[in-house]
Length: 88
Image 1 (cartoon, rainbow, N blue to C red):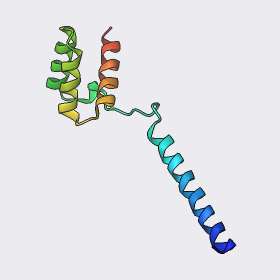
Image 2: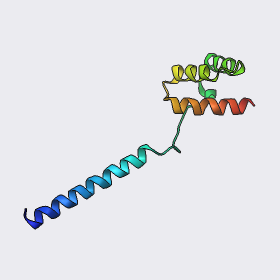
Image 3: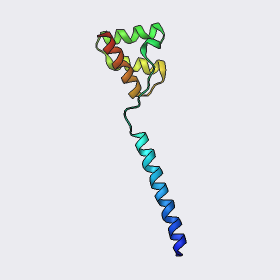
């Protein structure tokens, strides 16, 4: 193999590895959870979530939030945790 070809292949592989590592780091960051606050949901949904939390059914509250917003599990849990914290 010609030395120039080896150099081009080496640079291409290095660029690919750099790109993959960058994408992997972006996808594993846990500090970027965005969610819609429960207070922004319709009153009926807020009441259902509050009732579930009052009964100690956090999983049900998370399910209700996810049904209303189509949010991923991590965002729904964060939103319910904040709602629970605000309620005291």
